[in-house]
Image 1 (tube, helix red, strand yellow):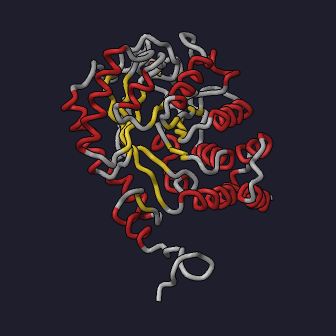
Image 2 (tube, helix red, strand yellow):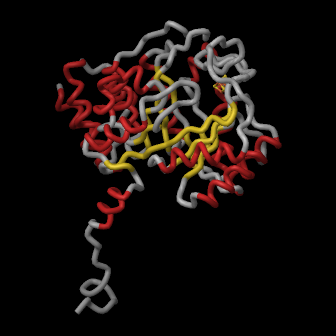
Image 3 (cartoon, rainbow, N blue to C red):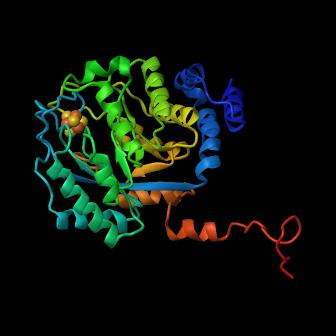
Length: 352
Ligand code: SF4
């Protein structure tokens, strides 16, 4: 049976993509086969991302006080979760927070604000922050996550230096109205399309553990593949007290690894990011999950605390990975053989 996953990896590496049936098999693999699943998915991970881990850093620009009713969200209308609530951070505070993540090893900063979507003034604020960030950290990637976009807003962000836009589809279209009623699945897809249309790298992912079926998880992943999401954050529901999904515990660490592996099989060359709920749900399997996923958030999440950034960086090193863009990463790239482009077989003089 375990050869099945290896054959599946062979087929994918040969250019024959995984089918929804393949994805279901991965999701429903017996726990005894977990390491075979990881080994096969790990081959795809290494084929596309080598031993690098992309490190991302969240800055919550505006926390809580949202008028939408996403049942999973501690910042939603009606949520009694005892989270930090504040309105917009200043530009200086944003630069300070982002700088901490970048000096900690992050290569991407995610500027996030709660709410249905940004006003023109909000876009101006984030554009100003992005421009200042790029001045101070020209190599940093900036991703904005501000909710549903209106016409022209994605272009404005792009012009200001924003590289990517995050808007998760969160769950399958067939399950969406069970988890939020104040906006539609189509609204979400429309925003991802707007971001793409403006030349921003689309970042869109999902949340597992929302009461969806296995088939709906597969449906969501194939939808993300279809949407062309460049990076796919996979969140595991953190059932905050005071939200409608409080007390909802559907995930085991092994299932979380299988979900990440399924994402890798379906979208082999996309950034698969272990997002919210990593510590709570993967627990001691976090490092195994890194052999499948190639990206994590460093440190804290939007409203919950993550493990110490130092522990994240240690986990990356201990498992033989390097942080993307770090000195170790650059050193190993420098050591790659330079491909000959002169002499025999070319019109250029040989090196002699
Ligand atoms: S729109 Fe965003 S911040 Fe508001 S409730 Fe939904 S997920 Fe939370």
